[in-house]
Length: 164
Length: 384
Image (cartoon, rainbow over all chains, first blue to last red):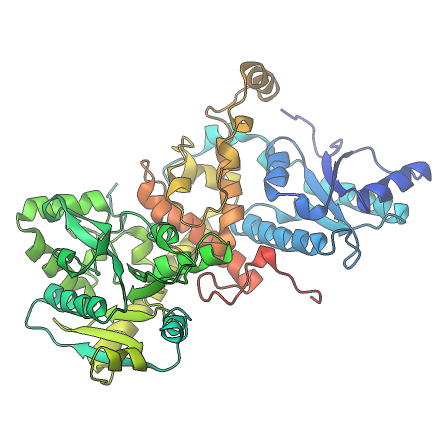
């Protein structure tokens, strides 16, 4: 497991980018020779609305420090409403992570258009900076989590119907 | 006939009236007589209703044809073997010629409404007969209680009278039997969208029926005021349950500070899928977690172990629950079947309701309220 300290910590970002806008935006950043940190691993999806939160959670549990979902600017979705649906899914995920005491700010949703390589570069810069400030993702070490768990927690407010 | 049919299934709340079914001391006979009337007047052709089996040690939903098979039914069954929304989804159809009365609890009605929104249930041939529900017990605990008492029907009557009079004894630590966890914190024990509603809350032996005026006239029922005693029990129960619910969810939110707290709850889970099987609104026809993806081949597991050092087997327990939470949270109607089915006694209903509560607040969505509202993931506002 990662033994990096916060000083030399390089966050890993998994980016789900939609084929029509954000991925093209990232492409444009590349062809325009815009320099940005190499912390991001991109995965092309057909639409931001097709990113089931299971993929995001899986990435966070398996070593990512942050996850970026990139979609078309609202109103510009190739499939009319995919990015609105992505926004609804993300709302649920954020509320869920918050309710569980997990850090919802590790998951970003950004609208990056195909013509906006500059914005892609900026988002990556900002995200790397924010994740460096946060330090490594504590969710990515499940074995340690299981090993140190106290186990058997039950709410005291409710008298368990099956006893202890 | 056509218009009448539409009215019954229109989920309307206007023009509802109350009527009291007077009892001669046996509420089971009273409800039996009421269902007989429904059959006789052609309001229903079939009835899905809980009925005693195993000498009264347990009750199960039964699909009944005709008045001759009503012996041993109890709409206020003290156990809930399954969330009946799944069964109702099987009998529901767009063919309206055979009408099925379905006796289900408020949480089951809510689940049914969510299933309708998911396109997995049809209501056109149904007459939804709701009940005001004071709660249910774990099925094996109930069987034990009845076994010890020796007389199923009188024990059932005694316990029902207690819980429907609003007594909270059956939640206490020293009670011989306790309500299911989710029932203890349920404050939505009535559902206004039922076509016909039956209630024995604060009614002694009588049964309060709420239905459309036209139907009441057809059945020859006298319109009466809602009894005060009934109202009082409802209101008391609402306030005490709401308080308990908030306390339990607050306790949970205080607990959850990191992933370790989630592991504290789920430490004994073996990903057996009982919670997923039990959940009425876990909507995928084939669960992603039951596919090949989650039964990896040896070399993949070994490579994974190489990377992690130690790998908990079976794998992906956290991912399974986090994903199920994500998919269900907006629609979780709090029936608690996940927890009842869990062989390890993991407090899943509190987990799902605490997370669901937060998600639903954020989306401004109340699951199971009305079929007219859309699922949050299927809808969106352009301006926000």
